[in-house]
Length: 299
Image (cartoon, rainbow, N blue to C red):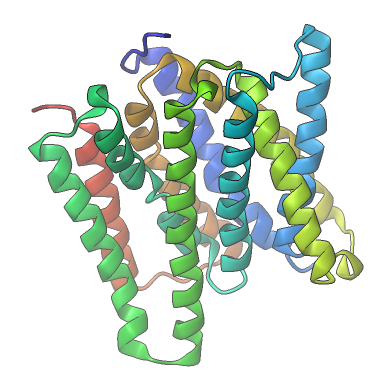
């Protein structure tokens, strides 16, 4: 059993870079949506990244493990990973990249709850519980504008926002399953290959079934987006993420990603011109405060 440790300066530095990349992820998908639908984008980027992981494993002389419960856990995490990004892809058709960044990254809250109830070394204290409550209050405040407005545009945005939260739940479930399964001791490339491979197959299947494959119009922004998503995000950043999960406490890593939605909102506003209303800003601030509180491990 690998002994996980609290975050050090190196882990914090890597997480900062990952947060910037992940903050750009929804923006990249949204920016290229006119030329390639989000489900198709994420399915294709996952398939390409899976091929890159296979090449890396071949170069290292590694083999994909299927024994000791790894195969079943790998497929299960792959399905959860696919459902997360299916929620993201569909949700981005209804809401903005800024909203998606905030609601998807409620995942750390669900992660620490799952780990609290399943792993004794990841228990939460009163401060962390207060953070969980603050985060959920933030989600309620951010949603309240849509319920109060009642227009079709806000109704659509609520659908996308809800899918963002659902995606966060699937992401949290993936992290908890990895920690509680044989994958917690597996090489990062193995875990990543199961997730990317499964996601590529499932989401490309959805894209084919819904006719998205016939609606592709390649352009410069689509090529740039696919390269960024497949090589930088799905291959390099996810590999680093799983490497960190094997060496540091998962709850500390997950909640540190509270910076990601801040970057996501900033990039959405600057690059896509996403509008911001007061209730969403207040709700997002509560979510971020809650995640920070969960990250403070005082008892």
